Structure formats: C-alpha cells, structure tokens
Amino acid sequence: MIRVRELSHSFKIGKKDKERRVPVLKGLSFDIREGEVVSIVGRSGSGKSTLLHIMAGFLKPDEGVIEVDGTKTSLFDEAQSAQFRLKHFGFIFQNFQLMPGLTAFENVELPLKLGGVAKRERRRKVQELMEQVGLQEVQDHYPNELSGGQQQRVSIARALVTDPPIIFADEPTGSLDSETEQDILLLIQSLNKTRGITFVIITHDDTVAETADRIYRMHDGELVEGGIIHAI
Ligand SMILES: Nc1ncnc2c1ncn2[C@@H]1O[C@H](COP(=O)(O)OP(=O)(O)OP(=O)(O)O)[C@@H](O)[C@H]1O
Image (cartoon, rainbow, N blue to C red; front, side):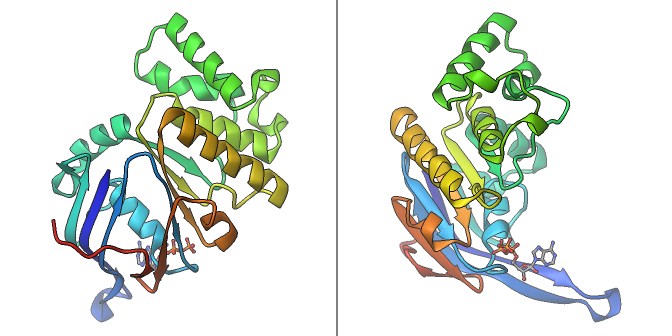
C-alpha cells in the first residue's frame, strides 16, 4: 500500500541570477492499494515522471508524506531509499533498458547474481519466470535479436525476479505497436492476478490507462480524477 499525502514539488529553472521555482506537483493526496493495477495518466509535462521518481525515492519532495507499507519513506536519506527500493520495488521502462551484452536469460538473472543468490536457485527462478512470460524459446538471444515485445517481456521478468511487491512501469508500451501493447498489458494483468503484485503504470495514453483497476488523472501537477483527500 502506498499513501501519498499533500505532496508538492517544484524545480528551480533558469540562470543563477534569474532563478525561479516552477511548481510541478501541487498538493497531491491519493492511495495505491495492495494488489491493484493503478494507472497515472496525463499529458506530457503534467508531472507523472516526477511523481514516480518521488514515490520510488529517487527524488525528495519539497513537502508531503509518502508511506509504503506503513514506512514513511519520504523521511529516508539516499542510502535508505536505495536499500528500500531493492526490496520493495521493480521497474519497467519504455525503452526496456536491457544489458546488450547479456542474453535474455542473463538479463533476468543479473539482479539475483548481484544479490548473491546461489547459481542453482538463480537458474530455477529465472527458468520459471521465462516460462511465465513466454520466453523459453528465445532465452539465449541477445536483446538485439528480440522483438520489442520480447524485450519488454525480458524486462518484466527482470523486474519480477527479486519478488518485489510493487512494480512501477513508466510508459511500458510506449515503444510497441498496438497489438504488442495489448499482449504486454494482458501479461501485466495476469501477473497481477497470479502473483498479487501491485502495478503502477505511468502513461499519457487513455487506452493504456483504462486497462487498470484504478485510474488517477493528472493535469498540470494536480490530480483531477481519482484522488482521495483524507489526512493521515
Ligand atoms: N530536473 C528538472 N528540472 C527542472 N524542471 C523539470 C525537471 N524535471 C521535470 N521538470 C519539469 O517538470 C514538469 C513535469 O515534468 P514530468 O517529466 O514529471 O512530466 P511528465 O508528465 O512525466 O511528462 P512526459 O510524459 O513528457 O514524460 C515539466 O514542465 C518539466 O519541464
């Protein structure tokens, strides 16, 4: 469960002598419940990525509270945020961000290797996920030998391999054709159902947003649909 309360953020812009602060998030309050697929939708520049960066602890907000499973993550320093992220969050990006020199299998295996998981356990886990996302046939291919949809499946498997309860997906279908987009959205839904993972999908596309259980709509740094206003 993620609780966001009275979240505000601004960025400094302009040259040093003419610096000014531009508000980007303006007092957002909302909840993301465990086991939901939530979409945050809005036009370019509405503040979606900034919101994601703050929820994931990459950026400290000017004001407001973020709680993840009862922990006030907005009070964390950088090291605490990084530690917390490893355990709680997985990430999927528009441009997949796979390691080009590793095969599909090795890309999915990498977080486990970095986490010191033994080889036999790694193999078992990666194999199981490759089957679940439908990649057994191409597991020895390098990213440039895979289609966009297959690359996104690899990145989804990689996000899942450490068993995070929450996955942030930033425009996960932004680089895919509409048929492949549907496949990936169906995969997200099925992983949500079978594994109970919470997905937070950031998108500018209404069709993508509408596949979620709950939709939050942003406009100009404000939630214009779906917010909740109780205080913590
Ligand atoms: N580091 C930064 N410094 C200054 N301004 C920034 C910074 N990052 C974002 N902004 C500004 O904040 C506003 C919101 O940006 P953000 O990237 O959060 O929007 P978005 O909805 O994710 O857009 P897109 O869909 O294009 O990624 C924009 O006006 C942007 O120019």
